[in-house]
Image 1: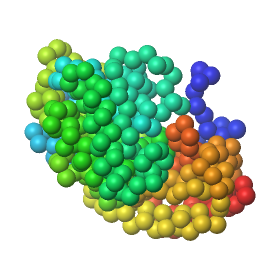
Image 2 (image 1 turned 90 degrees about the vertical axis):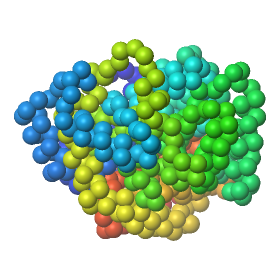
Image 3 (image 1 turned 45 degrees about the horizontal axis):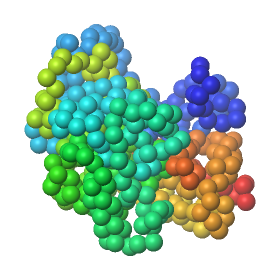
Length: 417
Protein backbone atom coordinates (compact mmCIF):
# COMPACT_ATOMS: atom_id res chain seq x y z
CA UNK A 1 0.00 0.00 0.00
CA UNK A 2 1.30 3.54 -0.69
CA UNK A 3 2.87 5.69 2.01
CA UNK A 4 0.26 8.39 1.40
CA UNK A 5 -2.69 6.13 2.20
CA UNK A 6 -4.44 7.80 5.15
CA UNK A 7 -5.09 5.56 8.16
CA UNK A 8 -6.72 6.54 11.44
CA UNK A 9 -5.08 5.95 14.83
CA UNK A 10 -1.50 5.41 15.97
CA UNK A 11 -2.23 1.70 15.87
CA UNK A 12 -4.57 1.24 12.89
CA UNK A 13 -7.49 -1.07 13.56
CA UNK A 14 -8.84 -3.87 11.37
CA UNK A 15 -12.62 -3.93 11.35
CA UNK A 16 -14.03 -7.42 10.88
CA UNK A 17 -17.82 -7.13 11.18
CA UNK A 18 -20.67 -4.90 12.24
CA UNK A 19 -24.30 -4.91 13.28
CA UNK A 20 -26.65 -1.96 13.61
CA UNK A 21 -24.60 1.02 14.73
CA UNK A 22 -21.69 -1.02 16.08
CA UNK A 23 -18.54 -2.59 14.60
CA UNK A 24 -15.90 -4.96 15.95
CA UNK A 25 -12.16 -5.10 15.31
CA UNK A 26 -9.84 -8.10 14.92
CA UNK A 27 -9.07 -7.98 18.65
CA UNK A 28 -12.73 -8.42 19.54
CA UNK A 29 -13.20 -4.81 20.67
CA UNK A 30 -16.68 -3.34 20.10
CA UNK A 31 -17.18 0.26 18.96
CA UNK A 32 -20.14 2.57 18.52
CA UNK A 33 -19.68 3.82 14.98
CA UNK A 34 -20.12 7.59 14.71
CA UNK A 35 -18.54 7.85 11.26
CA UNK A 36 -20.19 5.09 9.21
CA UNK A 37 -17.31 4.47 6.81
CA UNK A 38 -17.18 8.21 5.95
CA UNK A 39 -20.98 8.67 5.90
CA UNK A 40 -21.40 5.56 3.76
CA UNK A 41 -23.13 3.11 6.08
CA UNK A 42 -26.30 5.15 5.95
CA UNK A 43 -28.93 2.90 7.47
CA UNK A 44 -27.15 0.25 9.57
CA UNK A 45 -24.34 -2.27 9.47
CA UNK A 46 -25.44 -5.67 8.16
CA UNK A 47 -28.96 -4.40 7.51
CA UNK A 48 -30.92 -7.61 6.79
CA UNK A 49 -32.96 -6.05 3.96
CA UNK A 50 -29.79 -5.00 2.11
CA UNK A 51 -27.79 -8.18 2.74
CA UNK A 52 -30.75 -10.27 1.58
CA UNK A 53 -31.08 -8.22 -1.63
CA UNK A 54 -27.34 -8.51 -2.32
CA UNK A 55 -27.28 -12.24 -1.62
CA UNK A 56 -30.27 -12.98 -3.84
CA UNK A 57 -28.92 -10.86 -6.69
CA UNK A 58 -25.46 -12.46 -6.38
CA UNK A 59 -27.12 -15.82 -6.84
CA UNK A 60 -28.58 -14.66 -10.18
CA UNK A 61 -26.07 -12.27 -11.76
CA UNK A 62 -23.31 -10.14 -10.23
CA UNK A 63 -22.11 -8.07 -13.17
CA UNK A 64 -23.03 -7.09 -16.70
CA UNK A 65 -21.95 -3.38 -17.24
CA UNK A 66 -24.15 -0.59 -18.60
CA UNK A 67 -23.96 -2.13 -22.08
CA UNK A 68 -26.91 -4.24 -20.92
CA UNK A 69 -30.04 -3.32 -19.02
CA UNK A 70 -30.82 -4.77 -15.63
CA UNK A 71 -34.03 -4.30 -13.68
CA UNK A 72 -32.51 -3.01 -10.38
CA UNK A 73 -30.66 -0.25 -12.29
CA UNK A 74 -33.82 0.97 -14.01
CA UNK A 75 -35.84 0.76 -10.80
CA UNK A 76 -33.27 2.75 -8.81
CA UNK A 77 -32.89 5.31 -11.59
CA UNK A 78 -36.64 5.91 -11.64
CA UNK A 79 -36.77 6.36 -7.86
CA UNK A 80 -33.76 8.68 -7.73
CA UNK A 81 -35.05 10.78 -10.64
CA UNK A 82 -38.41 11.23 -8.90
CA UNK A 83 -36.78 12.15 -5.58
CA UNK A 84 -34.24 14.56 -7.08
CA UNK A 85 -36.65 17.41 -7.72
CA UNK A 86 -35.03 17.98 -11.11
CA UNK A 87 -37.53 18.16 -14.00
CA UNK A 88 -37.03 15.83 -16.97
CA UNK A 89 -34.36 14.09 -14.91
CA UNK A 90 -31.93 11.54 -16.27
CA UNK A 91 -29.70 9.39 -14.05
CA UNK A 92 -26.25 7.94 -14.78
CA UNK A 93 -24.71 5.56 -12.23
CA UNK A 94 -21.03 5.52 -11.30
CA UNK A 95 -19.02 3.71 -8.66
CA UNK A 96 -18.11 6.63 -6.35
CA UNK A 97 -18.65 10.28 -5.50
CA UNK A 98 -15.38 11.16 -7.18
CA UNK A 99 -16.53 9.58 -10.43
CA UNK A 100 -19.96 11.20 -10.09
CA UNK A 101 -18.43 14.67 -9.73
CA UNK A 102 -16.00 13.93 -12.54
CA UNK A 103 -18.99 13.08 -14.77
CA UNK A 104 -20.85 16.21 -13.69
CA UNK A 105 -17.86 18.35 -14.64
CA UNK A 106 -17.67 16.61 -18.02
CA UNK A 107 -21.38 17.25 -18.64
CA UNK A 108 -21.19 20.91 -17.61
CA UNK A 109 -18.09 21.72 -19.65
CA UNK A 110 -19.46 19.90 -22.71
CA UNK A 111 -22.88 21.55 -22.42
CA UNK A 112 -21.46 25.02 -21.91
CA UNK A 113 -18.39 24.52 -24.14
CA UNK A 114 -16.18 26.02 -21.45
CA UNK A 115 -13.54 24.63 -19.09
CA UNK A 116 -14.07 27.40 -16.52
CA UNK A 117 -15.54 26.29 -13.18
CA UNK A 118 -16.57 28.11 -10.03
CA UNK A 119 -15.90 26.26 -6.77
CA UNK A 120 -16.09 27.13 -3.10
CA UNK A 121 -13.14 27.76 -0.84
CA UNK A 122 -12.49 24.91 1.62
CA UNK A 123 -14.31 22.45 -0.68
CA UNK A 124 -13.62 18.80 -1.47
CA UNK A 125 -15.06 16.95 -4.48
CA UNK A 126 -12.92 13.82 -4.93
CA UNK A 127 -9.48 12.50 -5.74
CA UNK A 128 -9.50 12.24 -9.56
CA UNK A 129 -7.48 14.66 -11.68
CA UNK A 130 -10.48 16.84 -12.52
CA UNK A 131 -12.09 16.81 -9.06
CA UNK A 132 -8.80 17.65 -7.34
CA UNK A 133 -8.63 20.68 -9.60
CA UNK A 134 -11.88 22.05 -8.13
CA UNK A 135 -11.03 21.15 -4.52
CA UNK A 136 -10.38 24.24 -2.42
CA UNK A 137 -8.72 22.38 0.46
CA UNK A 138 -4.94 22.22 0.44
CA UNK A 139 -4.78 19.04 2.49
CA UNK A 140 -6.48 17.12 -0.33
CA UNK A 141 -4.89 18.77 -3.39
CA UNK A 142 -1.72 16.86 -4.30
CA UNK A 143 -1.13 18.75 -7.56
CA UNK A 144 -1.74 22.24 -8.91
CA UNK A 145 -1.93 20.92 -12.48
CA UNK A 146 -5.47 21.02 -13.80
CA UNK A 147 -7.60 20.37 -16.89
CA UNK A 148 -9.92 23.15 -15.69
CA UNK A 149 -9.63 26.84 -14.95
CA UNK A 150 -11.10 27.19 -11.48
CA UNK A 151 -12.20 30.33 -9.66
CA UNK A 152 -12.83 30.07 -5.92
CA UNK A 153 -15.71 31.89 -4.26
CA UNK A 154 -16.29 32.92 -0.63
CA UNK A 155 -19.34 31.91 1.37
CA UNK A 156 -19.21 28.24 2.36
CA UNK A 157 -17.62 28.82 5.79
CA UNK A 158 -19.90 30.87 8.04
CA UNK A 159 -17.69 31.52 11.07
CA UNK A 160 -14.27 32.11 9.50
CA UNK A 161 -12.95 34.41 6.83
CA UNK A 162 -13.55 38.06 5.93
CA UNK A 163 -17.35 37.91 6.21
CA UNK A 164 -17.59 35.99 9.51
CA UNK A 165 -18.47 39.09 11.55
CA UNK A 166 -21.56 39.87 9.44
CA UNK A 167 -25.11 38.75 10.18
CA UNK A 168 -26.62 36.15 7.83
CA UNK A 169 -28.25 38.67 5.51
CA UNK A 170 -25.12 40.78 5.16
CA UNK A 171 -22.97 37.65 4.87
CA UNK A 172 -25.04 36.41 1.94
CA UNK A 173 -24.97 39.82 0.27
CA UNK A 174 -21.18 39.99 0.64
CA UNK A 175 -20.75 36.49 -0.80
CA UNK A 176 -22.99 37.36 -3.76
CA UNK A 177 -20.92 40.51 -4.37
CA UNK A 178 -17.78 38.38 -4.26
CA UNK A 179 -19.30 35.98 -6.80
CA UNK A 180 -20.07 38.89 -9.12
CA UNK A 181 -16.50 40.13 -8.72
CA UNK A 182 -15.04 36.69 -9.45
CA UNK A 183 -17.14 36.43 -12.61
CA UNK A 184 -15.50 39.66 -13.73
CA UNK A 185 -12.20 37.75 -13.85
CA UNK A 186 -13.50 35.01 -16.13
CA UNK A 187 -13.10 35.26 -19.87
CA UNK A 188 -16.21 34.15 -21.72
CA UNK A 189 -18.83 31.86 -20.28
CA UNK A 190 -18.20 29.94 -17.07
CA UNK A 191 -19.55 26.38 -17.25
CA UNK A 192 -20.78 25.75 -13.72
CA UNK A 193 -20.60 26.34 -10.00
CA UNK A 194 -19.96 23.14 -8.03
CA UNK A 195 -20.75 23.32 -4.32
CA UNK A 196 -21.45 21.09 -1.34
CA UNK A 197 -24.49 22.38 0.59
CA UNK A 198 -22.57 21.39 3.74
CA UNK A 199 -18.86 20.85 3.20
CA UNK A 200 -17.86 17.33 4.22
CA UNK A 201 -14.10 16.96 4.34
CA UNK A 202 -13.94 20.70 5.06
CA UNK A 203 -15.35 20.07 8.52
CA UNK A 204 -19.16 20.19 8.10
CA UNK A 205 -19.07 23.92 7.44
CA UNK A 206 -22.09 25.57 5.86
CA UNK A 207 -23.30 28.98 4.67
CA UNK A 208 -26.53 30.60 5.82
CA UNK A 209 -29.64 28.97 4.37
CA UNK A 210 -30.51 30.56 1.05
CA UNK A 211 -27.00 31.51 -0.01
CA UNK A 212 -26.87 29.14 -3.00
CA UNK A 213 -30.36 30.28 -3.96
CA UNK A 214 -29.01 33.83 -4.06
CA UNK A 215 -26.02 32.61 -6.06
CA UNK A 216 -28.41 30.87 -8.46
CA UNK A 217 -30.00 34.17 -9.41
CA UNK A 218 -26.58 35.46 -10.49
CA UNK A 219 -25.71 32.21 -12.23
CA UNK A 220 -28.96 32.20 -14.19
CA UNK A 221 -28.26 35.66 -15.58
CA UNK A 222 -25.03 34.30 -17.04
CA UNK A 223 -26.36 30.89 -18.09
CA UNK A 224 -24.04 29.16 -15.62
CA UNK A 225 -25.07 25.71 -14.32
CA UNK A 226 -25.35 24.82 -10.64
CA UNK A 227 -23.92 21.43 -9.58
CA UNK A 228 -24.99 20.40 -6.08
CA UNK A 229 -22.54 17.87 -4.64
CA UNK A 230 -24.82 15.78 -2.41
CA UNK A 231 -22.35 12.94 -1.84
CA UNK A 232 -22.43 13.58 1.93
CA UNK A 233 -25.61 15.65 2.42
CA UNK A 234 -28.07 13.54 0.45
CA UNK A 235 -30.76 11.04 1.50
CA UNK A 236 -32.06 12.94 4.54
CA UNK A 237 -28.88 13.06 6.63
CA UNK A 238 -29.41 16.72 7.50
CA UNK A 239 -32.85 15.93 8.92
CA UNK A 240 -34.52 19.13 7.77
CA UNK A 241 -34.31 18.24 4.09
CA UNK A 242 -33.89 15.17 1.89
CA UNK A 243 -31.24 17.00 -0.16
CA UNK A 244 -28.90 19.69 1.05
CA UNK A 245 -29.83 21.96 -1.86
CA UNK A 246 -33.35 22.30 -0.48
CA UNK A 247 -32.09 24.69 2.20
CA UNK A 248 -31.20 26.99 -0.71
CA UNK A 249 -34.00 26.10 -3.09
CA UNK A 250 -35.81 29.41 -3.53
CA UNK A 251 -34.71 29.41 -7.18
CA UNK A 252 -35.54 25.75 -7.72
CA UNK A 253 -33.42 22.59 -7.89
CA UNK A 254 -29.85 22.45 -9.22
CA UNK A 255 -29.17 21.74 -12.87
CA UNK A 256 -26.99 18.76 -11.90
CA UNK A 257 -26.98 16.75 -8.68
CA UNK A 258 -24.32 14.23 -7.69
CA UNK A 259 -24.73 11.48 -5.09
CA UNK A 260 -22.88 8.46 -3.69
CA UNK A 261 -21.89 7.04 -0.30
CA UNK A 262 -25.07 6.38 1.71
CA UNK A 263 -27.32 5.12 -1.07
CA UNK A 264 -25.39 1.84 -1.33
CA UNK A 265 -24.98 1.40 2.45
CA UNK A 266 -21.39 0.33 1.83
CA UNK A 267 -21.76 -0.96 -1.72
CA UNK A 268 -19.93 1.07 -4.35
CA UNK A 269 -22.66 3.31 -5.79
CA UNK A 270 -22.52 6.86 -7.08
CA UNK A 271 -24.34 8.80 -9.71
CA UNK A 272 -25.37 11.98 -11.48
CA UNK A 273 -28.85 13.42 -12.00
CA UNK A 274 -29.32 16.15 -14.60
CA UNK A 275 -31.98 17.66 -16.82
CA UNK A 276 -32.34 15.63 -20.00
CA UNK A 277 -30.94 18.36 -22.25
CA UNK A 278 -27.77 18.48 -20.16
CA UNK A 279 -27.36 14.75 -19.65
CA UNK A 280 -27.98 14.07 -23.34
CA UNK A 281 -25.49 16.66 -24.60
CA UNK A 282 -22.71 14.07 -24.86
CA UNK A 283 -22.42 13.09 -28.53
CA UNK A 284 -19.91 10.24 -28.14
CA UNK A 285 -20.12 6.71 -26.76
CA UNK A 286 -19.93 6.48 -22.98
CA UNK A 287 -20.46 3.65 -20.49
CA UNK A 288 -19.58 2.69 -16.95
CA UNK A 289 -18.10 -0.76 -16.56
CA UNK A 290 -19.09 -1.10 -12.91
CA UNK A 291 -21.64 1.71 -12.53
CA UNK A 292 -25.16 0.30 -12.47
CA UNK A 293 -23.95 -3.19 -11.56
CA UNK A 294 -26.91 -5.47 -10.75
CA UNK A 295 -25.59 -6.31 -7.30
CA UNK A 296 -24.91 -2.71 -6.22
CA UNK A 297 -28.20 -1.52 -7.69
CA UNK A 298 -30.08 -4.22 -5.78
CA UNK A 299 -28.45 -2.93 -2.60
CA UNK A 300 -29.42 0.63 -3.48
CA UNK A 301 -33.06 -0.25 -4.15
CA UNK A 302 -33.38 -2.14 -0.85
CA UNK A 303 -31.52 0.51 1.14
CA UNK A 304 -33.53 3.41 -0.24
CA UNK A 305 -36.79 1.56 0.42
CA UNK A 306 -35.74 0.96 4.05
CA UNK A 307 -34.75 4.61 4.48
CA UNK A 308 -38.11 5.87 3.22
CA UNK A 309 -40.30 3.28 4.91
CA UNK A 310 -38.69 3.87 8.31
CA UNK A 311 -38.52 7.69 8.00
CA UNK A 312 -34.81 7.83 8.73
CA UNK A 313 -34.79 11.47 7.66
CA UNK A 314 -37.19 12.16 10.52
CA UNK A 315 -35.00 10.11 12.87
CA UNK A 316 -31.96 12.16 11.79
CA UNK A 317 -33.85 15.33 12.61
CA UNK A 318 -35.08 14.14 16.01
CA UNK A 319 -32.07 12.21 17.30
CA UNK A 320 -29.61 14.55 15.59
CA UNK A 321 -31.25 17.56 17.24
CA UNK A 322 -30.93 15.95 20.67
CA UNK A 323 -27.31 14.99 19.99
CA UNK A 324 -26.38 18.51 18.89
CA UNK A 325 -27.93 19.97 22.05
CA UNK A 326 -25.93 17.49 24.14
CA UNK A 327 -22.70 18.30 22.28
CA UNK A 328 -23.19 22.03 22.82
CA UNK A 329 -23.68 21.45 26.53
CA UNK A 330 -20.46 19.43 26.65
CA UNK A 331 -18.58 22.03 24.61
CA UNK A 332 -19.49 24.74 27.12
CA UNK A 333 -17.26 22.93 29.64
CA UNK A 334 -14.29 22.39 27.28
CA UNK A 335 -12.32 25.55 26.36
CA UNK A 336 -10.66 23.75 23.42
CA UNK A 337 -13.99 23.49 21.55
CA UNK A 338 -14.34 26.63 19.43
CA UNK A 339 -17.63 25.65 17.83
CA UNK A 340 -20.23 22.89 17.58
CA UNK A 341 -22.03 22.93 14.25
CA UNK A 342 -24.09 20.72 12.02
CA UNK A 343 -27.59 19.68 11.10
CA UNK A 344 -29.35 16.38 11.66
CA UNK A 345 -26.90 13.51 12.02
CA UNK A 346 -24.07 15.55 10.53
CA UNK A 347 -22.30 17.22 13.46
CA UNK A 348 -18.83 18.62 14.07
CA UNK A 349 -16.69 19.98 16.87
CA UNK A 350 -13.92 22.38 15.90
CA UNK A 351 -10.93 22.31 18.25
CA UNK A 352 -8.55 25.23 18.69
CA UNK A 353 -6.03 26.37 21.26
CA UNK A 354 -8.27 27.67 24.07
CA UNK A 355 -9.35 31.26 23.67
CA UNK A 356 -8.01 31.56 20.12
CA UNK A 357 -8.90 30.69 16.54
CA UNK A 358 -5.62 28.78 16.11
CA UNK A 359 -6.25 25.19 15.02
CA UNK A 360 -5.08 22.44 17.35
CA UNK A 361 -4.66 19.26 15.28
CA UNK A 362 -2.79 17.58 18.15
CA UNK A 363 -5.82 18.02 20.40
CA UNK A 364 -8.12 16.63 17.71
CA UNK A 365 -5.85 13.60 17.27
CA UNK A 366 -5.74 13.06 21.03
CA UNK A 367 -9.53 13.15 21.32
CA UNK A 368 -9.85 10.75 18.39
CA UNK A 369 -7.53 8.29 20.15
CA UNK A 370 -9.23 8.69 23.53
CA UNK A 371 -12.67 8.16 22.01
CA UNK A 372 -11.46 5.02 20.29
CA UNK A 373 -10.12 3.73 23.62
CA UNK A 374 -13.54 4.44 25.08
CA UNK A 375 -15.31 2.49 22.32
CA UNK A 376 -16.32 5.27 19.92
CA UNK A 377 -15.21 5.83 16.33
CA UNK A 378 -15.18 9.43 15.05
CA UNK A 379 -14.03 11.16 11.88
CA UNK A 380 -11.69 14.09 11.29
CA UNK A 381 -11.72 16.96 8.82
CA UNK A 382 -11.24 20.67 8.36
CA UNK A 383 -9.54 23.13 6.08
CA UNK A 384 -6.01 24.46 6.22
CA UNK A 385 -6.72 26.44 9.39
CA UNK A 386 -9.12 24.17 11.28
CA UNK A 387 -9.09 20.88 13.13
CA UNK A 388 -12.49 19.24 13.32
CA UNK A 389 -14.02 16.08 14.76
CA UNK A 390 -16.79 14.82 12.47
CA UNK A 391 -19.83 12.86 13.66
CA UNK A 392 -22.04 11.07 11.12
CA UNK A 393 -23.49 7.79 12.44
CA UNK A 394 -25.99 5.60 10.60
CA UNK A 395 -29.36 7.34 10.33
CA UNK A 396 -31.04 4.65 12.44
CA UNK A 397 -29.12 5.83 15.54
CA UNK A 398 -31.23 5.57 18.71
CA UNK A 399 -31.53 8.16 21.46
CA UNK A 400 -29.76 5.78 23.87
CA UNK A 401 -26.87 5.30 21.43
CA UNK A 402 -26.61 9.06 20.88
CA UNK A 403 -26.32 9.55 24.63
CA UNK A 404 -23.78 6.71 24.91
CA UNK A 405 -21.62 8.29 22.22
CA UNK A 406 -21.91 11.74 23.79
CA UNK A 407 -20.76 10.39 27.15
CA UNK A 408 -17.70 8.72 25.62
CA UNK A 409 -16.87 11.86 23.66
CA UNK A 410 -17.27 14.00 26.79
CA UNK A 411 -14.73 11.87 28.66
CA UNK A 412 -12.37 11.99 25.67
CA UNK A 413 -12.61 15.79 25.48
CA UNK A 414 -11.98 16.22 29.20
CA UNK A 415 -8.95 13.94 28.95
CA UNK A 416 -7.09 16.61 26.93
CA UNK A 417 -7.83 19.53 29.29
